[in-house]
Image (tube, rainbow, N blue to C red; front, side, top):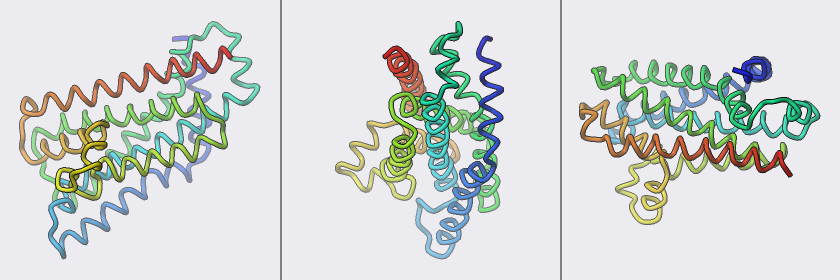
Length: 242
């Protein structure tokens, strides 16, 4: 539990800028309301509440990549982290300390998106619990990507790369379109990444599919989450030993 002191400090740093947090939570919900309203007037499957809500939630997690990468990159280039590297903390401890502060934001993003989604008709059934679990898992994966970016790139480079991740989630996650209908390179790249699997799986659960029928995609999401965090630890260890 050596990382708890650093975690506490990082929590203070993260919540020192509430405007960014509000942006990362409120903007996706506003987009959900906008496109759900469009869907009511021009019925399109991808703009229904059951389709939009998980998609917008995953889109919102891209902001976790942005916030986490910026915090780690800033500290890595400062004397603060240089001093901490002389302590007994391991790379795993550092990654955990820079991950935990963002988990409450992820939960808040899920709650806000689903609250808006319920207003527009999200189906409430027992499958919503595994659906929320999958969304929380992919949120951790997005934080893991932030750890990779923050470990490898500078404070000036990190925001641009993290913003590219948000665009990738939008285009290749199937947030605003059906990837299977798009086909081609969009589907090929999309289904080589975990975001489309998380969105499709959550949509299926909200539409009444049982968890057993989509267990393979669940493993895909869990596997990518582990890979991102292992890479984050390895990247941090490599950069701090240079």
